Length: 249
Image (cartoon, rainbow, N blue to C red; front, top):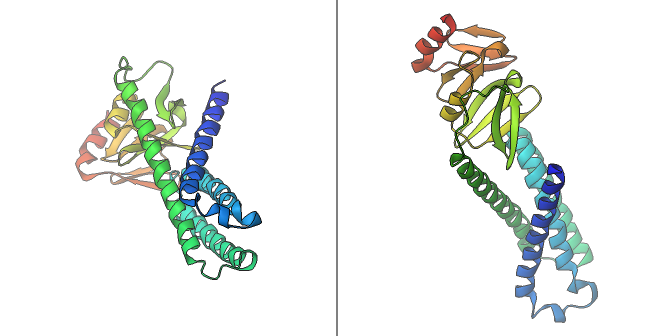
């Protein structure tokens, strides 16, 4: 049922977004559309339809599943590759099918629409998560570590219950947190202090301003760092004594 509601919300939201984009273009195209022959009357709107599909793919697949999952190099590689290929393809179609020799304005629009679409998506995502966070703040406070053995947080407007045993470490990402597990990385709007208060003290130790580790997930440790697999997590200077006391206790 929850997945159905999310799918319906996604479809309605994107339908409204596409309708707004087409309507905005039609307002500026109202007086010129009658002067274009045949297929040229609707071709700009077909282009906008394809462009919107690309923007959704970029935001939901490339940005959300690569950039926000800390795969930034992979994201930028795919982003520029697809943008360049799309630009060449658009230039070819404009010149061969529509006899448009000056295609630069169209190519600039392609890049601008993509970046603007990302900006709208990030803004909407921030506002939606911020609203959900405000709702949580006025709810009764949760115990520091609930008996179910799960870390509860909001991810993309959906409450996730992540088993403590799955969490490897938690990393601060400005106003967000990345909860890293072996299978998946969750991004939630919380402070590291709030996460620290919710987690069991004996299992999780804060080792720096930006990182909390799950002790049972550590493969190797030194006074200055912990290793979880190949990932090195440095111990902050002001946290060294605190970490040593927690481990010895």
